[in-house]
Length: 406
Image (cartoon, rainbow, N blue to C red):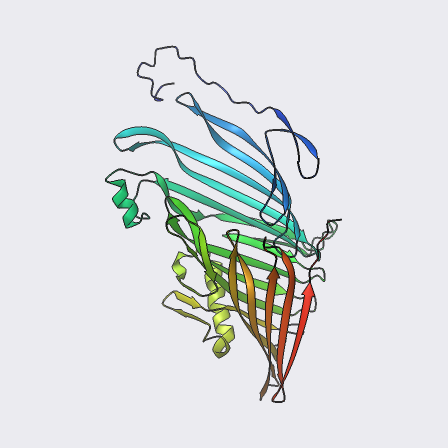
């Protein structure tokens, strides 16, 4: 063990040589299912009542100083997301760890210097809407005080603290066969970028791709998402197209890290976003929306301010004289540490132009989401207001949700 804290490399040391995974058997207390796996098994129920099963295994280990350090871990989770419309999903998460010897507070220590999480999720909800999502994120440790609060620096009293100092969104590729038919290849969508990438298709064949970038804040040495920005491009089976831009800002208790609130109002420097594609799409959507969106979203000197999500689309095969602009604002509530939509207000403006003049048709839709105490959905109330010929028409629809697994 030269260089691993042994003063005399010539001595014979009885130490850890290898780590092997063994079979383990566990019975699910909720379903009665019994599973045997060479690694770790976890059966769980989340706070919304969704059941999940995770199997994980560490394929390689590093030994240093007579201790074992995980090098490469793969976890597969299958479950049911019960917080919204309901979705079966499978997530494969690969975590790779990096280690090194660092001098901290005058002592040499073998520490984790970074770890990278690569995640791939496929899912289908109650209405057969399918999606695939991929991301690859690297978390970096150091003793820099740049991300520590004044209080944390004061309490450290000169001591060096080894903690997460940076989060890097890395390049990842996502692929989806939109019709699920392996004999056809003209509908396979693949794209590569940095951040969280998603491809989705609904039951009618309408599809979309999206890119999400996160900006992080650091609390007590841990990274939390402070702002999230998403750009989405969609195509309908009739050839209609749309582009949308949305964002959400999160606020945390700086002492505990608990999520306190969330809002669709953001104010960020887009230089902090990792994807050049996302930055371009932000500018393009603002340009396409023009005066119809200027009071809701602005980009000046790389500073992006938004008070709602923006969608600009073209109906009937993308024909330019049938354009619509939708602005949506969302009020969130925090349930079990998650931000869930409580009420959304969407103002949709259909712009019909014949080249010389245009007519505008405005529809306002207010959707109130009703949840049980545990956060699960039990209904929605949707109010629609249309202005036709200067006269206002209003309707209200209530929907009750009842979910049964079959």
